[in-house]
Structures are given as structure tokens and as C-alpha cells.
Image (cartoon, rainbow, N blue to C red):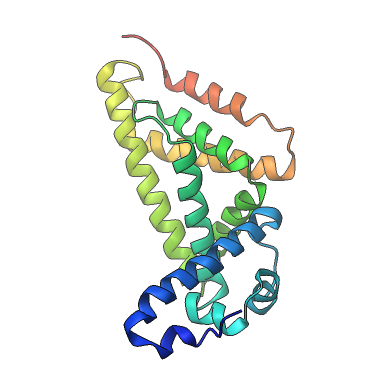
Length: 204
């Protein structure tokens, strides 16, 4: 393994080398968390499992929580690239497809749940920023889809789009938590029921 200090010993090529080294560590960490989720452990223990020094993880990610956030974000980006969501599908279908991708990597579902739980506790700034930003972004995107569907007459026009978005996220996240505890929970069926209540797929 190369000495991690090389990242700062060669200024001209140091930035590119540092970015590449960080990505290598992130790739390895994703594999680890995809298998076992975010069990309560230390940054030092994760460094050993990933195969790098504790100093390397601290240098590139700063803290365990920041590493977890980056692992989840990168994993989510990869899953979306592999199976992108079409732009014209209704909100519950967006979340169903996302949940379907997530179930293929149970460790990442657990990691997400861990980050959201940490965000509710004081002193977890990275997790709080991640969860707050994610919810705001997903709500806004789903609300836009609701308005588009309402304009097309394929979802009830009497519903507040922002509230629908918040409800769909709550249902999807809650169902994923239940699925972690009991894999027999029918997430697709529950989301289909919600879609029916919202009038998704109706014509006129």
C-alpha cells in the first residue's frame, strides 16, 4: 500500500492523486457497508476492514459520520445510474423503484436508516445536513411530479402537491424500516394502495 502521506508530499500532482486515493477508499468502503450495513463500530475498525490506515480515513473523510454519508451518497448515485427513473412516472412509483433498487443492497438500507436516526440526535452535524438536504430535495422533486400529473389529469387535482410528496416519502421510508425488521412486509403492495388513494393513473 502506498504511504498515504504521498497525497500531500507532491503538490503538483497531489490533488489528482488525493482524489483518486479517496475514491479507491470509498469504493472499498461501499463494498463493506453493502454487505453489513452501518453497525456500531469505530473509524479505526472500518479502516482495518477496508484495508487502509486510520490516518487515511481521517485525512480523506474527517469522521466516521462523514464517511457514512459519502458511502450512502455514492452508492445511491450508482444505483440510480444503473436503473434510472423515467421522468414521467408518478410519485409513489418513483419511491417504489428506489426501494426496489435499495432492497438489492440491504446494507445500504440499514446505513440510510442509521444516518436518519443519527440526524435526530444533537452533535451529528454531517448526518443532520445529509438528511435535511435529502428530504428537501426529494420532496421538491416529487411535488413537481405531482403537479405535472395533476396537470395531465392522472392524479387527483384536489390534493396539495407538497403534502403528497411528504406523505409518499414518509410511507416509503417507513415501509423500508419495517422491511428491515420483517422482510415479509409487502412494500410494493402498500405503495400501490397509496397510489390508488391518491388517484394515480386515473384518466380525467
